[in-house]
Length: 167
Image (cartoon, rainbow, N blue to C red):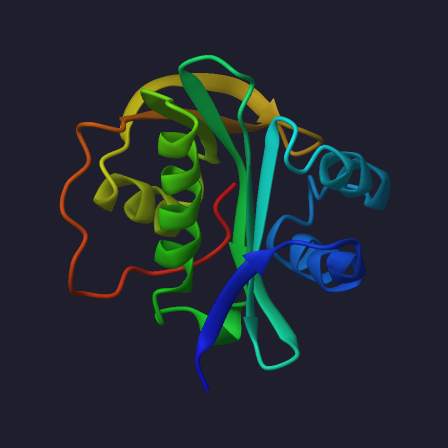
């Protein structure tokens, strides 16, 4: 069975919240936060779901505030589906959306204790530009700030990138 990408919908919230709690137990977004984000879909927000059959196996979202910068807000893939390129497909979708909005660069924060996500982002041309000490609460984990220039991305043909929680 193949994975298909589509816009994230309100009816996906139950599955998204399950993934959210499993990947980010200390700092999971609340149902209200996701509902507010989805309400902005198409108006400065872009959320995409990865589905296999009737199962949601991943999701990702970004903020497109209207300037030349975008920000990846979240990306997660069900652990049972890691290593199949789903995270790469989701991130590709986000970067293509940023390019459609004429963004020149994309930023994100990733947990300092999440090397799997850091590796994914580095393969897509993101580089470390700073650290936000104690960014994730209540754990106090640092965030690594990463940046990707959309005209600086490496070729991503071939190979499968790991897909995991990317916050």
